[in-house]
Image 1 (cartoon, helix red, strand yellow):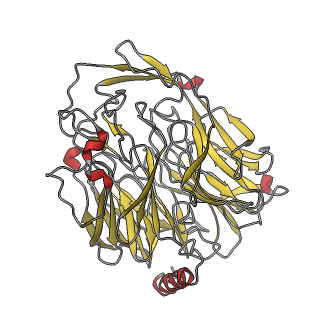
Image 2 (cartoon, rainbow, N blue to C red):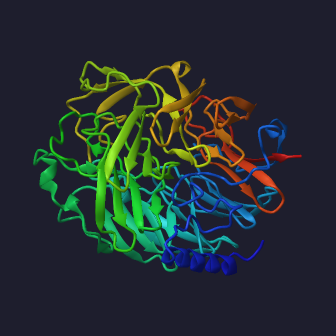
Image 3 (cartoon, helix red, strand yellow):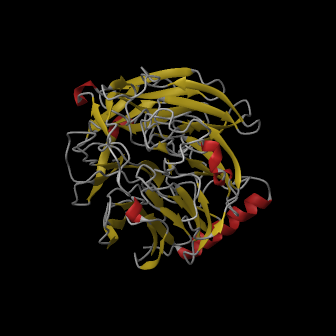
Length: 533
């Protein structure tokens, strides 16, 4: 393997210089790499490669595959830097060769607690991941040696770190899930990448006296618990962060997708402003101080988190926007300069959203799985299009008014609420393209299975996507026409990346999301690397 450190230090210096000159540093790698969960820290997912195009995409072949030999709900985003692709399983972190799939290293940990992990961050020769116990671990990117571990949250309260961290200017940013558990609270942390020191700590829900900050406390209106107007006997919860975040490098702003308030599925539990719940929150990257938040799913009682990273969008007409796709099935366009919502438009079937959940039950669409889920929108700057993957799947929820949750137990979901999804055969999905300047739909591509995997547009005007039926396909970015498709042996619900490590454009896809909740397909988790032979 090549040495990561010398190049990464230079990249960090160039990134800081670009900020001083007034331009945004999009990521820490070269143009051919995929160095962050959504390629750029602005989360646009746009890949500059053009070798694979509409005329030759039909010739794509599997060049190699890496079998993790583990069967689980594989949801890892992939990153590619220098001579490696990095990914995660529930218990392992690994590095493979981006051309041959030969394993460079694999680090195993005996994690306790809830399973699930969505990938790593890369910075200055290190990779970083979260754990079920609420910690972040740093590994040497070249050798896989563990460098440091920092605990952030309380696994006894159901708190864990599933999201891929994001890296910027010497810091790692990440939040925890567990807001759906009684006593759990959504929080965001900034860590020094070299040492693991907690630089600042921000609560996405009101603190109480027992909530001791682990770093410098970011200034926050969430300390004003009175604005929630909840019953004094009702414990405040929610605000988990389920996926990676976004960074506006020019303004040094951390952009956080926030989870629902808890308890879930109870209409009117928080009659006031449940600040920063099912919202997008903006913080200062250096101090953690609150800047602004955009409430999107008001009085959320369907588990419609903002659970995917927003995308920074510079439109053809010059607008600076934030594109956001919560689990409620809509695409929101937010004007970052004026600070207001421009449009909210349905991307999937939306039905019966105002009826309260009762003991008799209510059916609503989209169900608690979304809408969009943990992968957010992508932006094609050449065609001025915002792409979103969607789930079309309804659910029926029934309230158990007598249920009393204990500390750390889910305060809805399988306990306190009985949720029945429609039969899997009735589920489906969409890939939708919308005009970035107007929000109007340009085309819709229907799929027979939910689309929860990442979307990847390229400069060759191709959009790569996958679904839970194991269909991996390429669409014409302008028209939505399917140009190529292949079926793999596992569901696709994780990362899809495009890169060039020196031997031509490659497309890597993570397959094998084995989750009975989502799909009946079961296969070991693999990474398949495609190219032109």
